[in-house]
Image 1 (cartoon, rainbow, N blue to C red):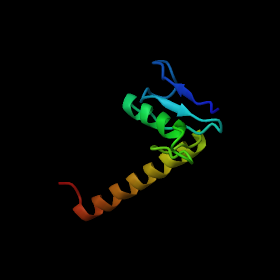
Image 2 (cartoon, helix red, strand yellow):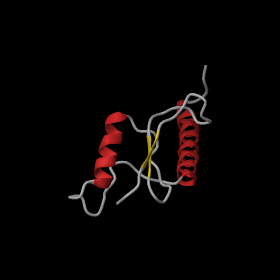
Image 3 (cartoon, rainbow, N blue to C red):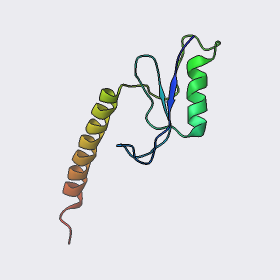
Image 4 (cartoon, rainbow, N blue to C red):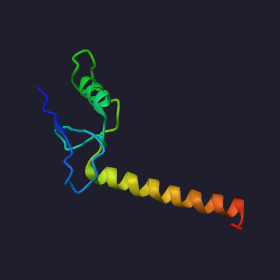
Length: 91
């Protein structure tokens, strides 16, 4: 039997409320799912006909999510620099 935890954010949580998290036995989690996504994720992780379990949404540790966010932010800033250089100075 598997144990999955569903986390529901509270308004006073340190991270902004952005949906539900499904946390597995290894501490890996989704990153804020809406209700339909939550049900689909739980189904894909627990349905007996789905062997091995194939999550619909990525499951990562908090460290992996933080690293992913930082990399995304770096790419976003780099893209902004490139687009600014192509567009030229603002007038």
